[in-house]
Length: 80
Image 1 (tube, rainbow, N blue to C red):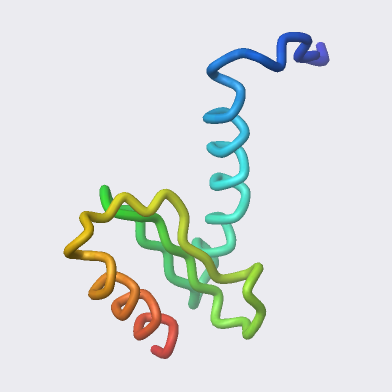
Image 2 (tube, rainbow, N blue to C red):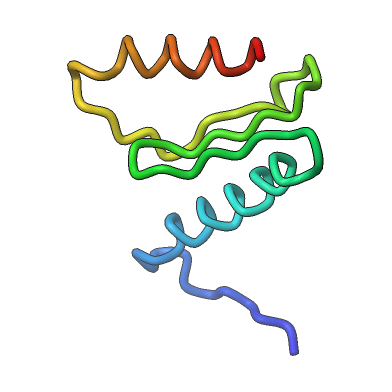
């Protein structure tokens, strides 16, 4: 059975699309030698490949005070 969405005004559409995209991309962080972090502050996956599509951060929920430190933490975690 194929699901067809007919009502694109649904308030659940955008969150469902976002959840689908995140689930797809974070799978790259679950392979051997890769990193996946899923916290309440953000989700990060690192593959080690020098291509931005294969390393990323989703759902960043940071306080104003934590933004700079969190960005530094994410950048430094990709160096390891």
